[in-house]
Amino acid sequence: RKEVEQDPGPFNVPEGATVAFNCTYSNSASQSFFWYRQDCRKEPKLLMSVYSSGNEDGRFTAQLNRASQYISLLIRDSKLSDSATYLCVVRTISSNTGKLIFGQGTTLQVKP
Amino acid sequence: DTAVSQTPKYLVTQMGNDKSIKCEQNLGHDTMYWYKQDSKKFLKIMFSYNNKELIINETVPNRFSPKSPDKAHLNLHINSLELGDSAVYFCASSQERRGVGRGYGSEQFFGPGTRLTVL
Image 1 (cartoon, each protein chain N blue to C red):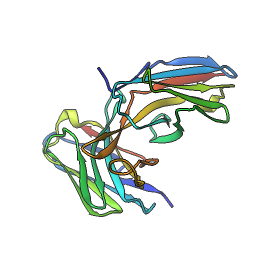
Image 2 (image 1 turned 30 degrees about the vertical axis):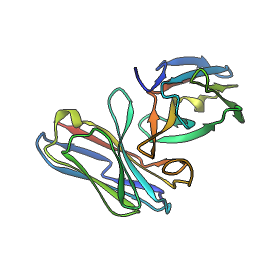
Image 3 (image 1 turned 90 degrees about the horizontal axis):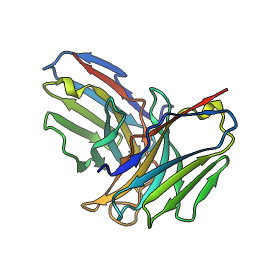
Image 4 (image 1 turned 90 degrees about the vertical axis):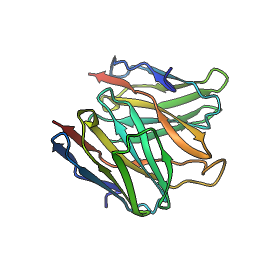
C-alpha cells in the first residue's frame, strides 16, 4: 500500500465549478500535512498547509481528518489558471528526522 | 535572484557514463534535499543534508553520491548511469524549525528540476 494515496484523475471541470480532491495516508504518526501544486514541467510549490481545524485560503479549503487519515482540498469557482497537478504531502518522522512523503498527484484540467 | 537553482536543466547521456547535477540555494536555509520524479510522476526523496550533515539516505543505489561542500550547495554525482535513472531530479531546501524530532518542518522550496535522459 502506498504511504500517500490520491486519485490521479484527470478531473476535467468547466470554469466556475467546485471540485474536491481526496487523499489518504497510512502512517498514523504523521505530523504535518500539505497540498503542493505542480504545473506541467515545473517544480512543486506549496499551495497550503492543512490543519486539524480545517483552513481556508481564498477559494481553497483544506480539511484533515486524523481519525480516518484523510485529507481533502476543495477549490471553489475554478479558474483556467487552476489547471495543474495537486500533490498531497505528509510529513513523517523516521529516526528522529522529518521527511515529506508525496502522493502521486491529482491532475485538474479547467476548461472554458 | 533565483531562490533554488540547479544545473544543468537538461542532461542527455549514454548508459555507463558518470554525471553530476549541481544545486545552490540563496535562501539561507539549513537543510537541502534531492528528490527523484519518475515517469509516473511520483516524487520520492533520495537524500537530505542538514548543515552539511547527511540526515536522510533512502534506499538509493550507491551509484548515487551526494556532496554538500557548504550548507548552500548540494550536488549529486551519479556513476555508471542506467536506463532506469532517467527521471527529473529536483533539489529543494527548507529551514527546519525546532520541534519534535529534527525540526518541526517548514515549507520546502524546489529548484526547477534537471531532466535526465539516459540512452
